[in-house]
Image (cartoon, rainbow, N blue to C red; front, top):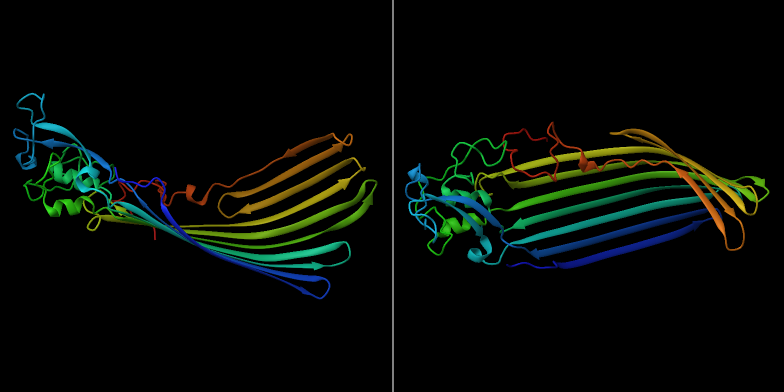
Length: 356
């Protein structure tokens, strides 16, 4: 087994922040962050299983010239099941390389309207680009083709291994030039090359843009102090573009891959209000509510009530009631009628229309 427990990793980062007072009431703040991470991890070649046919098989074209009847198997048996570990034959070399670039920027302004009220507004933008490439792992359909002459692990010439795959690709008649010998040497260089022709790439580009504002300050005096009010709103825009290319189980990836592009998008309009009421020095209430309007999953209003009662110097009783809503992840929505996502297995999409 050739694999890394921990991937090699390189990181680079840059951070900058600046603050500037403009007069006595206005404060400006700007932040910038950039980070880059790259990983490279050796992984196993992979395993596969398929039926191997020998003399006496129903279809002579599927007879593997390297067929050997294992000890203890009845003479005349025309097929065996081969469980194959590619690491022993192919050695090391499979690896997964990934890198992520993240950029973040924030501009914030805070203005004191009066001695007791202030206004805050800002803008945030974040960009994240991730890329993952898989190299040298076992091409399962190539293994099947070299063992029994079809892309079906069981050797069927009519039933695809994967539902939705349009047809069964065949590699017959099998000869020493296009077959795999799972028992020893003799496999041609062309077959060995095809067994690791399984490259895949996944790219994800994410952006977030957030504009926000708020007012907060004192509204009136109470026995326990000043009642305070905060109101605000924000607009958030999310985007995620996924672009994935993977083998489509019809042979080597270089000649049989499928591409999937899925653009996700969501914007959220929000407003909130929060009121703090100090009834006495030892008893206070916090009342708030938030409204969110999602472009894809509807709207929701969530209230919250919190009470604090300080009985003594060392004892405080707290009580809370709150409602909350968490929107489903962008990637939980499929791109088409069958709910295909970037995390879905790629098998079986060859006959489907792809978005984009």
